[in-house]
Length: 322
Image (cartoon, rainbow, N blue to C red):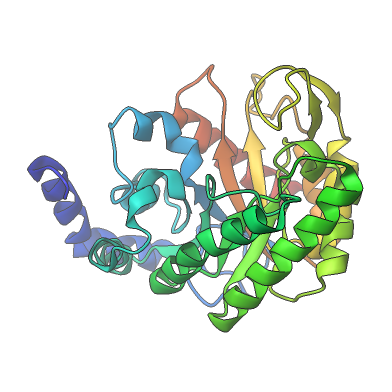
């Protein structure tokens, strides 16, 4: 239950019909979109969504809640499609009362629930069959939650320890089984390049080819291409071997059902320092991809709010240029 002040905040925003009317009336639609889009370029090849991780510092600091996220995405940033992170409502996957409240907030504010990013439910590429099976089953509740919320997709991980060949074989099995369950609910299961083998574009594309299911795909992240760290883990420690991000995204795009437009640092002109956005977006545009690019700001030199706005402006500027 939200504190009274937060409930009041959500109720005030959700009930602001005038604001919703003005926003919807002034927002153009993409020519190939079923709903409103914040993208100001009719006919562009992508729409913009907001990844909740962009606000992880505020969420962990309890400055906002998961229930407030969709409203903030719309009110503060003019973004009406959201990507949740399960860490911020980890115990609510089976709580239909909570999910119903979240869904109502989104409907009242014309916000589209796009996907849920799932972490901490086990390794779908674990070489131990029993452990892998448990991980697959742990994800079922998030497939159900995604269905309840009207999401199209859940993002998962395909981690595992062992040789590249053994983990790949295990990941194909785990993703295939989860994909079978998700297909019954018309939900996509997508894997992000999240470190170790999964950040090797050729490796993860080969996994997708072996899975061969229309509802199992990938979520290329522009920045997550560290395949080896000095601590031997997928995360933490210093990156000592990195896969070429442009090659990796190109290899992943045939299976992509979305992409994470990651940003960390910007120059004075508002360009992303670590990723050449014109090059990356041109690469994506030249494929058959048509869908959401999720803003995922992860820097520390500027505020989360400023980082999100700069990323959105960069996407719009780059799309117009290419």
